[in-house]
Image (cartoon, rainbow, N blue to C red; front, side, top):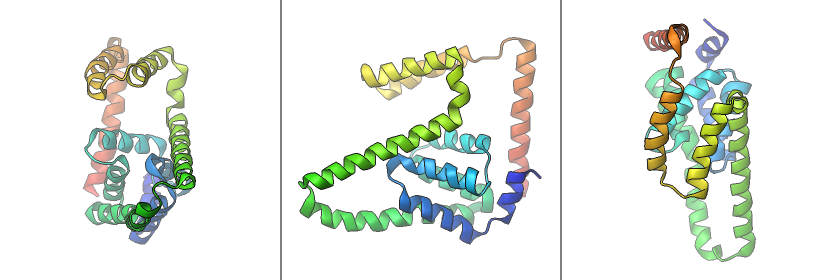
Length: 208
């Protein structure tokens, strides 16, 4: 059993609830992903960066909020269905309470310039947190020319030319798969071994 698996085995439902409650209480917008990585990977060691990235990639392909999807995946991985429910409850509870309160106050203060400025600042902070996670998880991709070309092309298409994200995914997805296809029998074998090891790891989790 590796260190992350041993740490997960010791995690109680109360600890899971506390971690996701804290992340939900102090994060804003997409910045919650940054806090989840800090607590799940750096602070508690329940996941390593590869596990976290796997869960994040799956979350982004599913409908709904990435943070909620992450809660379900991580909670289920650690304590099954009850763990998933506890993680989602912890993450959502602060937001529900805050939004219900702010919803009442917003109608009275929606034209307040100071409040609007505060919200702009919160949005900027959330972007900064997401950028931090991107650099931490994707630093290996920022040194390879092909990765930089793919990222730059997608950024230009979405941000500058305002191409629909659906069309970008439909076009860029197959191109990226073709560009990153295994080159030769050696690389194919290496990727097969890596995929097999990951599948065995997940299968061992489900058995337990």
